Length: 169
Image (tube, rainbow, N blue to C red; front, side, top):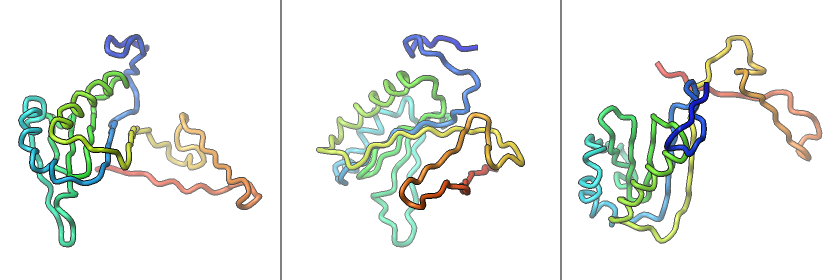
């Protein structure tokens, strides 16, 4: 049964939704101003994001382009920051209005230390987990209808579709 969400302005929440993660990412021209004021940003977030993870850079990798990760205690929410990146990741998504509000709260804190003049890229990605149905390659899940049209390329219907899946252990 669908339940109205107080934070979603009457939008239904789906109690068995396959959604496991939502990411909103901003890419912008790199600026060391981000690094210079990262301590202020960390202080603003430390109540909700007490865990700091600093990435390792491998040979030939630019450490400034690898994001620092601010994490909630249970890693249900994450904020990534690098000299050219800001992203918010939620693993406790309920409805978009709540996610958007939380994203803009965090972005507002980030903009106190750096306000990019323009964006190179904006991305919003939803990750769903759909149960696998063995032996059903033409339709891996009842909720998916896979179709592909390539008009003008071959003049023939597409008969083979290659899928990839991620298996986590």
